[in-house]
Image (cartoon, rainbow, N blue to C red):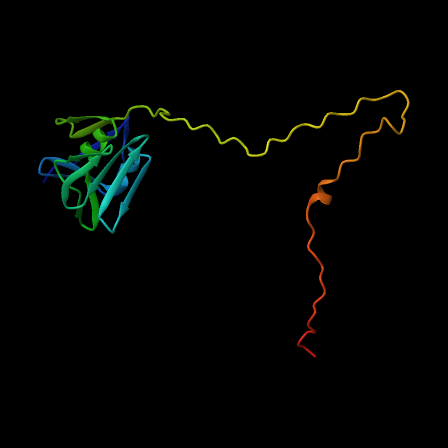
Length: 177
């Protein structure tokens, strides 16, 4: 019987419902366990692709194929994702390294330690400028004696500028009795 492999991400042990598997010298973990590494993980059934993304880095793997897209460039992985017992398993080291992490296998302890780089905001997009910038209305200066010429001109109220629906009578009599 193979020893159980323990996955440690940034010093925290990953508790999973299904244990990692070793296939051909590569440690495979269930797809759901990648949530400890990445910000987004999704599977597309139409092309059987798995996309794992963290910050501005990503890897796209294909079930049953060794080719991959790593940060927008074509590449390859040592072991393709595969289904084991109804669950989809992916190569842990390939995904972690594509996301910029350091992966260390400690053979005596049967542990894989993954150290993730800190997330940094690489591209900042400022919020859009509003199309309408309200300008403040200057307040009238108080005068000693109110006079009709000193009063500000009447401005139309916002309700007066909103178009109202027309009430046009029907030229055809209704069809009901």
